[in-house]
Image (cartoon, rainbow, N blue to C red; front, side, top):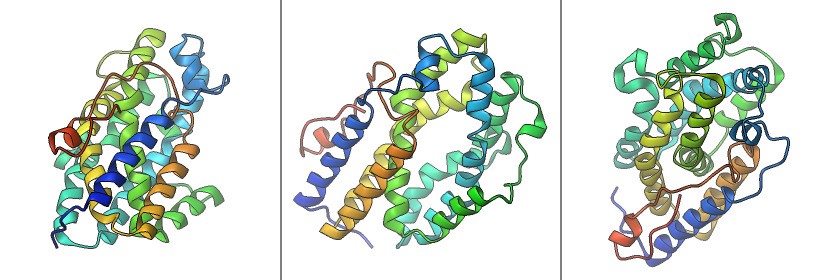
Length: 248
C-alpha cells in the first residue's frame, strides 16, 4: 500500500535525524572502552572482552531481529524496501559475506579462537530475555530500534576501524565488519528513515518509533556518543525540498 508523506511525517523524519545527531554528540563516559580505543589506550585483552561480549547480540540480530522485522512489516511494498537493508546482513546470498562471518574474522584477528563465538545462542536468562523482547515487540518498536542501529556504522565505525588498525596492527580485511557498515549503512539508514516517515502517521506511532530509537541509543552508549568527527551528511530531505540536510 503506497503512502503519500504529509508535512507532519516529513517534520517527524527531520526530528528523528536531529535526535540521532544528538545521540552522537553526547560526551562519552571516561571508562568507555571505545573512547579508550580511539585515544590509543585500550589493551588488546580489553578489546577482546568487549567485542566477544557482543557476539550474542550479533546472533540475536541475525537470527531473531531481522526475521521479526520482515515478519511484522505490514505491507509488501515496505517489506521489499526493508529487504534492501536486511539482505546485506546475510551477505546478499553469499555466506562468506554475511555479517556474522565478517565479525568472526575480526574476532580471530584479535586472537580469539572459535570456541569463544559459537554459532548457536546460549540458553541463559539474559539471552532468553533478549529474544523474548524481540519476539513480543511491535513493528513500530522494531522499526525504531533498527533505525538507531543503522546509524551507528556511518557515525562511528570508520573512526573505530582506523583506531583498531592503529592499535593492534590489523589489516583492512580484518576490520571489514566495521567498514562495510560505515559505508553501506549510509544508504540503509536513509531507507529506514523513509520507512519511519511513512509509518509515523499518528502521534501514537511517532511516539513508539521515537521511544524505541532513543532506548536503543541509551542501551548502546559505548558506540552512541562523541568518539570523533562525523563528516557524513545526508541530503535526501534537502533534495526533496523539505528542509536542510542533516549530519549523521
